[in-house]
Length: 332
Image 1 (cartoon, rainbow, N blue to C red):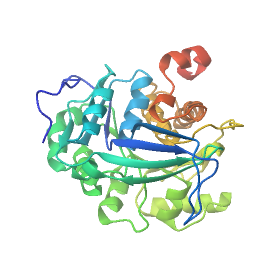
Image 2: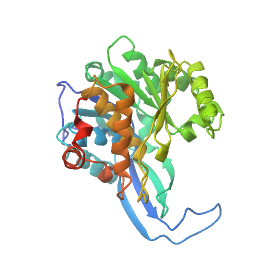
Image 3: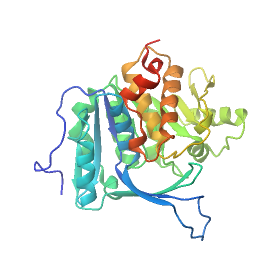
Image 4: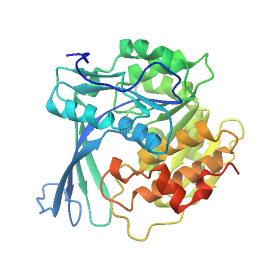
């Protein structure tokens, strides 16, 4: 079933600043003392079901900061899909008009979280794999009138490439989060790398794309050069507790962004998505800030998210930032 008029959805075609084209997943989370080894069964301490998927996470992260957002995504025709749509509709500033449903299962993510906050994730895309070019065409007016469009790797790369190609002759800034990264990049992904304004990867994803282990500053620089050789314009590599590095193809100067470490992280699930949503927010609403400062503020917001359990519930709200650190919302 495609989305029907009987299902209440937020939004209209008014100006939206941040559009996320991506995934919705039902998170099935097991909290464990440590991550199991292959072939091992261990006892967990707690189980929790939640709403996730990189696309929806990034959109919710931006919406919780007060951004005008929209999501282009697919949900299943099951109860999970109905519950997820209802959850998204709780955000008045998140347009769900282009979140449609199909008669297959919703995407699922099986997540194990250890006592030190590390995680292992297996996803089954389900309805996410049906996001196609016609869905992009339907949302094209919205996409072309936005400020920032964000993509990830949990939906078909062919659809991502098609949408990025439609953005080429616009002033819209595009962020491509290559997550998860395939071990062998397909042609649609390679083309997408050349079309995106900013490409963002973490250490593991950078290593998969470049076959370079990021175990030294020299190797990080080599990895960035390798990504530039693939046609990337601006690259951000997030380094978890160690912040991030970034560079542009023009200067090739590697700049570091430091972040204060969290002594006892509770749950790192979704921290990267929180970073991407916050980055889109700062690019949209604080365009005069240098990219390094936008990245730094996004890192600080992602840092706050690892101090709580869960994914979307852990993302900081605008009111929390105003209470904890008003400097994050300063134009200077």
